[in-house]
Length: 136
Image (cartoon, rainbow, N blue to C red; front, side, top):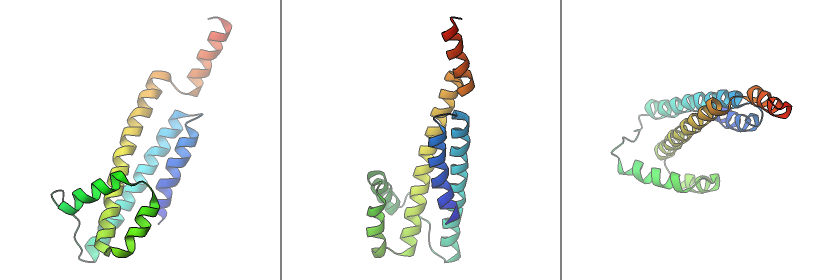
């Protein structure tokens, strides 16, 4: 539970920090990724310890789940669907969502790093603004 909360919270805090510090936003987004990786291992352990199967890349259920997860970003959809699903299915859906979130966070970090390199951080932007204001 803590890994899930930490991942979500660091995404939110990173986004908020982005207004003043791209460096902090990048760091917090990476912390979120680490928390989600911890959660991923927890779900994989859940399946292994109970003798349940983790869906492999060629499993039709995984392809179907990927499509459903890509189409639904509202937690209510999942809450309604869970009572009808087995523990194995729920864990595999969670694993799928974690992988998709990880992929999205990788893309976000790449974008933030490019922005940081191109524009600098807040200090560099303030220096540019001062120089422009002073006519340098």
